[in-house]
Image (tube, rainbow, N blue to C red):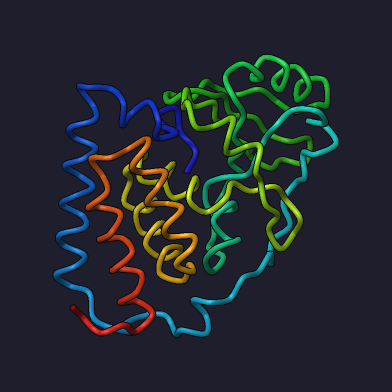
Length: 225
């Protein structure tokens, strides 16, 4: 989704005035989803385990050479869940690197758009592809960017535990649904990595993390506990 109000999660969760409403929204969503969830209902299991790159997105690697960056949002999530439709490419960089990133994009012919509420700026490629550059003030971001993985297209993406953390901090319904779907198909090693990150950076959401894991398992056909 592309808008001035688009947040990146980290700032929202850490703001005292907004964090409470973010947590409340998250927990209401999880309570409702767990009440309504049925094992194996919805998408076929073979589809849930499919990893594709049907749509090719711009690779900013040549433009951002030497700058740590990664794809996030729906495009980043396709490395860990079925690909879903989205209108734009979300990328994340540190706030410190943002001025240089903006300069390079402008020089490459990207059209600069409005600032994003949660930190960052929107751009459009010369070919008309919307790109949102997110710059969360998140202490874990440099560590995450130092361990990027590659999606089926070869784009750099955050490791699953960090992407889940970012989505839970954002707290939007689609982000939580993505987190549940990614965690449901994730090996236990990845889930434990997410638990460790939450203990360090978002301890009050550990119970919510377990609920997301359970939701993901139910979608894959696990029996209710």
